[in-house]
Length: 615
View 1 (cartoon, rainbow, N blue to C red):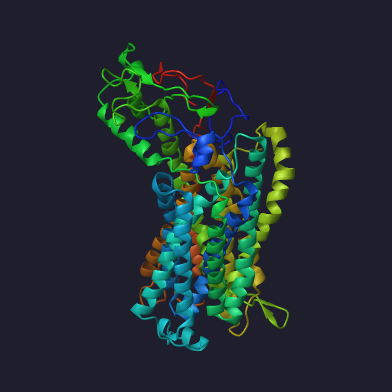
View 2 (cartoon, rainbow, N blue to C red):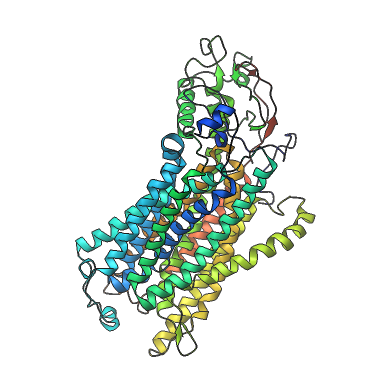
């Protein structure tokens, strides 16, 4: 993993090209700028774009911040709510969280498709915001109305398993609310960043600065939301009232809808540009139809050309034809009767451009790395489930009167990230750059690999600490270890997130073509979804396999009687295997090669020989 990849040295690079998107609509290879097509008829009439700019930012950032405050405020302490308020056992509560989290993280992929292809970003965000409000209101009602949750139960009764669990109707009401929240997240999260970028004109220096500043504000509000949800909101839920703790985010979600609608007068509304999925399907179908033909290099003589229409009117990152996944290149081979007199394809399901083919190759190449992320994220999902269970059995007092809520301990990971990233960016990267000659100090795949190592170490330390905590609890039934014992595993998990998640964000944004980056970011959410389902699968297998011969299973409701440490060590073994798999994939990965072309207006048909580039 020394390099993590092999890059083609003879491919020219450019850091000055503008961010432009390429769209193939209605089967036509015409190109348009995705972010510069407002629905405003007056703008189109005068041929000018009038972006909302910073006037639109309070409304967009406010809407997104309140949505995250609602959903994250629910998730941060949800394990405690399910076990204490609904009296679910540890495994059932973990399954609900994992399944809901998985569904929520898959939803943005669907939301991105609907937004790009049909509804547009504003309409998608507006509809999703109402869905989030409905979901939060439903979950708040489950805590407020006695008819929607089981009767109260003492801590001693809960330990003995004597509490009444939720009825089907009560559980159904909760799941209904969570479903509405997932729909809301699926519409807001993939659209909020692109909708904010739409407000700035990327062809001007002021617009480019605005986009960079918007990203800074976006991630700043993201961090603030996490800190608020894991401290203030969790404390209100834990010490004041669950209905109040859920009601405040619900009220803020209603305010976000008002903000979004009030700002509608200043927004720039980019038209839906069509989905990338149709382009992917066209390449697959065209390659299948031409599966029997031989590519020029295989035929011994050049008996075919490749369809490579030029780019018109502005800078664009254009992908060269590569030798990877050569069977897909057949979709771009021009045969008789494939082109119209003007040079455009007769059938877009039989002839695709080189750009379309290479875009699909970029997607396929990232799948193995994406799969490794699913396994490495499994350790992160434990922070919201079994780490909370550990904290509930520990002394969380700061002084004689203040007790830290169990769901707030994740702040340790956030503080680790907040302290480490500036030091990494300002101190470590410049030092590494002198030795590696790499602009980022290390490659993005190396960064991801380091993150996987930290995920394994965090589970190893978690197992060792849980073994010590359990031994102490059995020897001293009336005493509890301090919550500070959990700090090492949470600090290591913070390093895991700082390396792995941010590395993957950079990886997907770098390796995906410009107009497919929103889907690339959605794949990161899908990795979290996959990790939630994988975690749920492992939990259920462990729960059913280990509880035999009248012995409690490893994940029994009383963790002092179970063996949570064994479960952590199992995740260590899975993580080690995943690390070797990742190293294998990283060593064979080839980063995307880019060429920047400025092409004058020409006919669409541009036939090129197969490039011998294997980057």
